[in-house]
Image (cartoon, rainbow, N blue to C red; front, side):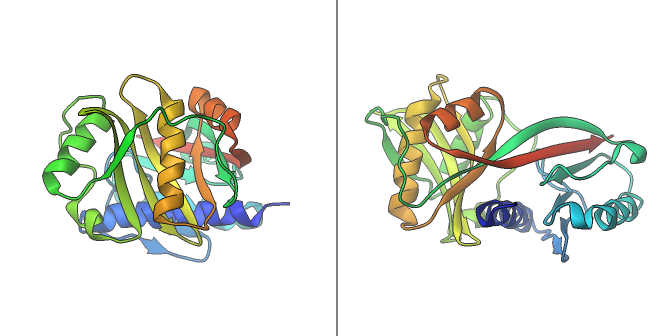
Length: 239
């Protein structure tokens, strides 16, 4: 049985992706079963996200077929419940991940390392944050638009040890949950960053579950810290 928290995690993620696109001047569209974007999304963001599960798979596959005929170029689809078969449309699986959640009353089993957290407030701070998130590599164009800084339900956060940036993440409070994404640690020590992020989520958006998705070592670290696996997702891509 699919949990309510999983549904909220999926909806939260779709709303976050829509906010990222809106900050670049092109909001997406919501249907009963999909979030979609016809004009092309910022790097690392999908062109469509499924909002419902297996009962809507055939309808979603047909809608994606219609969508991808509307323009040339690459496509990315977030299959939120791992129920689509897009191989006949020329897609291949880019990666799989797991939705995760932490109940409102739970804490993570990890120390925050005494990190000091700061909310990003200016365009210059956002540019520095994005560069650190990208591993120090400059982006061809910013992924995150400045309007995101002015949305009260969204928080870009940076973690410091003294004056040295140690990591960061994004929180977005929508669909009755707090979504966390884009978590990074400058020196690869994700445990203290994740613990501090949970503390900040509790402070900024109290009384709400925390959700997101991870894969690989980051997933293992999150589960070991106290997050619960909610269900699998799959990212499909086509050039």
